[in-house]
Amino acid sequence: MGCAISGLAAKAEFGEVTTEDAAADVAAADASCPSEEQIQMIKDSWKVIRDDIAKVGIIMFVRLFETHPECKDVFFLFRDVEDLERLRTSRELRAHGLRVMSFIEKSVARLDQMERLEALALELGKGHYHYNAPPKYYSYVGAEFIGAVQPILKERWTEELEEAWKTLFQFVTGLMQRGYQAESKRQLAVPPKERPDKKNTAL
Figure 1 (cartoon, rainbow, N blue to C red):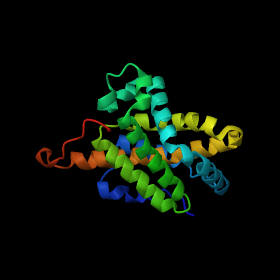
Figure 2: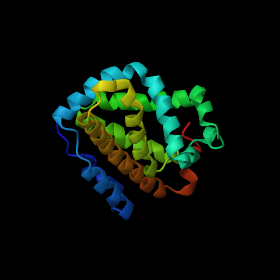
Figure 3: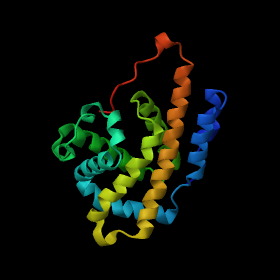
């Protein structure tokens, strides 16, 4: 399968390593890949979860805004929304939830091709730089995903399955952090006039 976090070697193309880069690399290096047994558990549980991906996506983000209201700052459309129940019927939130669930689905599909999963997560991290979505928020999503899928999986949910999903999210978010830092450094090397404008919202 291979799980060497290949992006560590690619760091050279961005020049010297900064303190933030090093912190992101440590986070990624500390997050090991899921084991073969964990991968199978994740795949089996995903077969059940994917039937409710729209529902899970909405629950996940409503929970996220409840537990970490500061995350709303990243989402322009929801910054001033006080009634979180209203978000459950939001088409925009549903659409974003589906995009996140689609990324999780792609991650699960690439668990047997770890290099492809690494590339996907690094690219997503780079994209989040342009959405003004800093790495400190990434780990929150995994925790809320786990909270959202437990009721769906019911008796199938076990401590071992929870640990498997946590391992996957830690691995992916570590890579996303490094992608974000790499893009941040790359943009600093570009003359200001040539830099693309950052998007002011994740939606």
